[in-house]
Length: 151
Image (cartoon, rainbow, N blue to C red; front, side, top):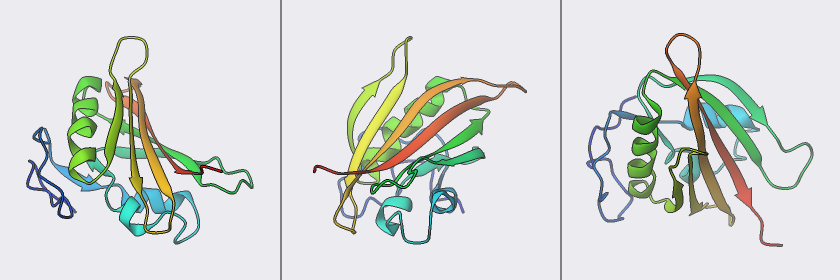
């Protein structure tokens, strides 16, 4: 399901994105729901994590290990270059209602972090980490999502 190519993606009443989304987007919801039991990631969180069309999920990891707060990641592969992938998330997360609070795009480690209130009473964080070369002239990156606890 393709959602859009520019800032025309609905933002739930938020103001439009300041940066046009540089490629076609789709929701990561189907992949996010594979990380845990149904309903563990609230719908208003899962449906607003967008990924570039053509990005392929290669591995899923639930890091909860019996913990109280959700923590997991998806390893994606993309033909897009790392800077293109990071530019995509830097534009799409704020437009989908996420508060982008770190976009450390440097040579050492590239990280984008954003937070959003879930409709389950918890805040959630999503992080995009280190796109790096993989086999077949593709790049891999980690999309991590976790439930934040302030206790």
